[in-house]
Length: 336
Image (cartoon, rainbow, N blue to C red; front, top):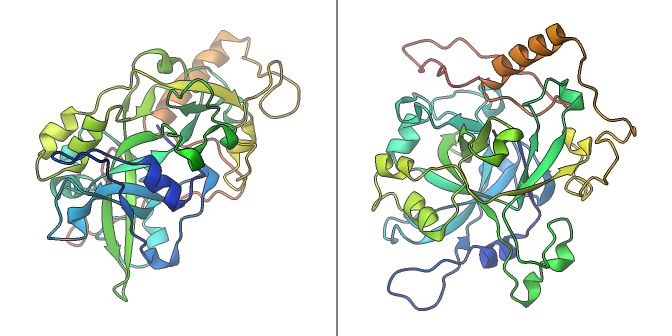
């Protein structure tokens, strides 16, 4: 799953980090940053991006300009957590958890199928994402938090922006995650662009942290194919999504558990021998085998519905609403 990310770059820095090669051109191109009103929500760089925050995503320029080449790209700020296009009323009250969507059954989903069929594919950008270890029988507050990022050049440290050297042409390797976006209109005709991150079952070493992971696009060719919906049809694009083979991660403090903590302490490596919560105590695994089994079963039931990050102060619990069949589609079984 993917429930928190880190993106501290300004729009101009993102443009520089997202250069791409286009067929027939010698020089790399930069995607242009296109600002949107988004019902008044703005992109704010943050060490702890949470659902309902706005971040820039890559899309084909053809979505915003009918005369554009579908291979050209734009950076567009969108809200994390897709708002269904059929929702009426306050966009914050649709009652669905849509920050992640499962690859399994995606094409047949009443919620995600239409954006996929319309070619509304996007690439979510982040310096890294946070994941909580859920493969061990621990309480949510005791789960270890990790910061996951792409491999970098030898001298680049993810927790130290001074090593990125962006001002002198340094190239930070961002994580590029496949997603879908949709457009919702309020009663005044204002548009809200929002997106969801695609996830699937984890393979490889990362399975020791979590049994699901975001669909990371590792190569420039994969990014190009995912974005160019005119050249690459939906079924072929879905086949591009494969488990990532190159990821790095390290333990961080559980200060990131609270989505209101936006400081640079969120992605700092945890000192060896210290607990994540700052108490100096390490997490304790229950000694009772019966208790361990109960916790494991409970965890899997929770995880099977795209588990959220640990509960944080100020979080709001949403309930699914009953929707009239003749007005709106029913919530998908893959939407928790």
